[in-house]
Image 1 (tube, each protein chain N blue to C red):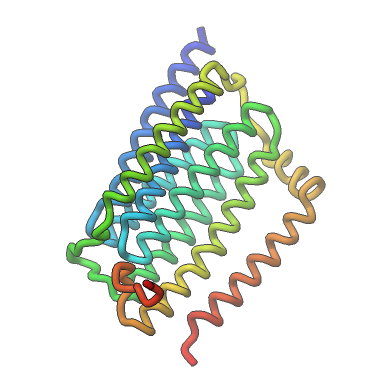
Image 2: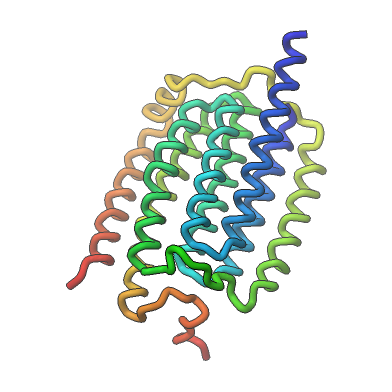
Length: 169
Length: 99
């Protein structure tokens, strides 16, 4: 009984999250106001973070909120301001050849949906998928220690590259 | 919960991101669409990690988040340089390599 109620709650939560993510993503790619697009992106990223929490991935969920909403969206807003996009007004932000995008994206969506339903239609997630942050940390600093260090070097390279590219000579 | 709920959400997000990359003409908007694609990948990684009960999916999702941060930093620097050189980030106007 309790398990059943929990599952119903999970499904309801997932439906809300999925609606927020899909509507937000559609607005990100269709709105004609750049700042609105950034705000809709926040909704999408928060929804994805919530779906991580629903999957029991607490650390990734929190990291998603911190890194994406805390840092990357702010970076986007800086980019919008620095390129002097029309912050308040509406401009045409969709390219002339937007039907090409539709022609590519709709078949991708169709093929992906068909393949996923065909391949994983019956797979149920375990009832408890919660994975502790300590387990993630153990894995990160034992099995994946070298990739972790390589990623930090990559991040340093990107940092220096961004400074070199963006500074005025 | 069904695994497919998350996978289909990821697929939808991915397709919307692909449409955004192809259909937007502002450089910053294209970078935002790339973020949508990377988030779709992350949903899949975490969902499969939950299905198999391993933390590997989460670890890879963390790597993807890190690389996304690096990508946005460099990408915005490139867009900024584009703006400085051409006073516009309209991708329709950047056709210097058109044959």
